[in-house]
Image (cartoon, rainbow over all chains, first blue to last red; front, side, top):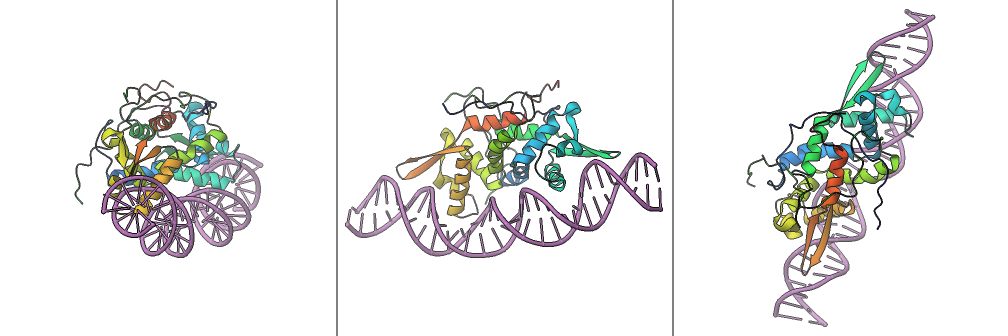
Length: 129
Length: 129
DNA sequence: CTTCTAGATTGACAGATTTCAAAACAGGTG
DNA sequence: CACCTGTTTTGAAATCTGTCAATCTAGAAG
């Protein structure tokens, strides 16, 4: 056995109901257009720092997190964090809002759900094989 | 190239039960180690061609697809397809097996489920948070 | 053994990505 | 207003990616 279950590994989505989702399992293979539309979101998730950033935002109290809180705990500079937040923002995974001095980010749950639904359209729990 | 309906947007996982999954919603923020481990898989999904490749494999009859079947329908060269399949393979998303002359690939459902579970740990349907 | 086909690997190159330092910008406060 | 702090933008360098042409390897068929 080589697969041990690491610790708490979750990105925790806070709310919502899917909508912009997609057809359930067994459907037709994805179209080029859809692939082009969806790939960027996964690409944005494809970086350890962004994954952690997203996770911290999702797990934060109230479902949102201030940039100043996110910057601590990472070994990269402020501008780099800002850059990653921008990537996540442009991928539609998070939304930012400025309140006075600070900027708060929150996860766009529907987007996350849509991506998850794409990976397991009908739920992998049944199966047969 | 003829364009069928673009409605069906799904990658269709064929089988299995999750296992190497992760904690449900609301857990602790993901660790750096976990982020580093998981990011590559999302990164592999972050390319339109790989997304389509994965989808076609998943939707294929019997849950597996021959490389020779995958190569048609893409505008990139054979080596490029081979490269993408390698990326997906190294990300643990697919597995390949040679049977005589041809090589067949199938989706590693547990991996897909694990990734999906990370995005919506508890299921976004009743988000109590 | 030679030849053929299916796939993978190597080498090269344009373009994208990550990262930081420095500068710019946005809001508070004195 | 000047000044300070929090966040984003710009500029530039190092690294990584996607792609193809050419080459190589694994089985199957002569």
